[in-house]
Length: 117
Image 1 (cartoon, one colour):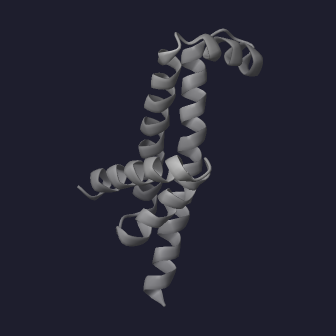
Image 2 (spheres, rainbow, N blue to C red):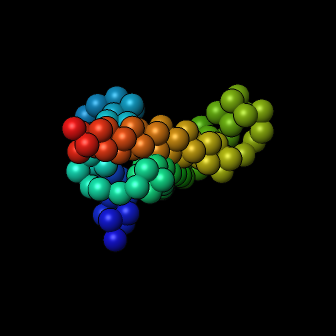
Image 3 (tube, rainbow, N blue to C red):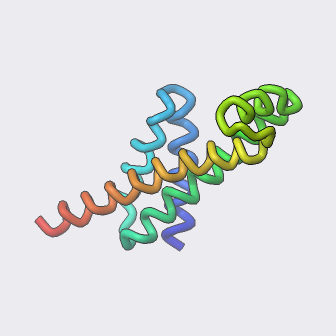
């Protein structure tokens, strides 16, 4: 149950922070939540990873679909040398998920250091 709550809180916090702050604020959101929710290091990483993978995947797909994926086709050709907007959405979600996963793991490890001291 903690992982579901953690995923939800990380996604909501990252979304709200992303409205007002730069893109890397997702790492701050993913770092803060595991400080307050006790879980193992693996589950902390997974909760940050899943939360941002779903958040950025859905958001980038919605943004791309709103303009019939015209921009996504051009960016996919430029970045990936492949005309696949779905692959571009996947890579975008994966990059955000890795950032959040490692930030959540760092927050979890800091929590363990603080609790021991």
